[in-house]
Length: 130
Image 1: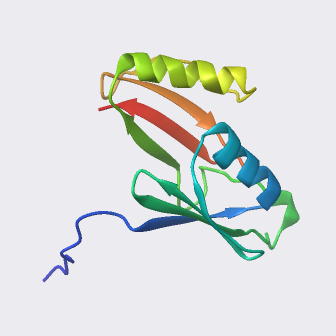
Image 2 (image 1 turned 90 degrees about the vertical axis):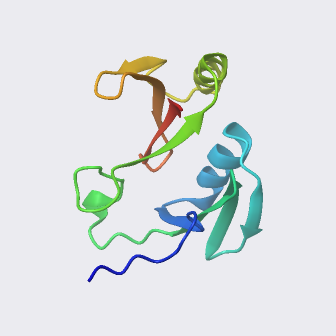
Image 3 (image 1 turned 120 degrees about the vertical axis):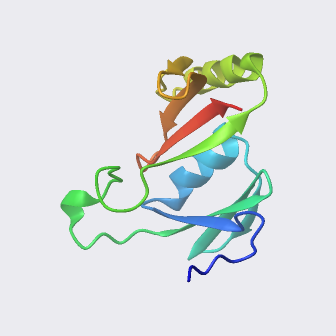
């Protein structure tokens, strides 16, 4: 028998960060996510009703101190977008802030417009049309 909890949404996502100062600048100052917890061990942003938490990274092997979507675990995070104009505004805002991104593209598998970019720890984010 499968155990399926009666959950209605995600409460939080916790990621690891090499440098909290760089992470705060990116998520708060560039992406505009409100910072709701700021301690030496934990920072938390509010993102559309979900908490996005970061703990300090301490890689066992410093050679692998940046995120890789090819390892077991997280590949990327995707958020939804309500309008094509908003998607283009966001892509331009990323570019204006010096954040490398794909520009607005069409995902051939889903036939949806999106823009993809990476945070300072190389974690990929996507902003997708609903």
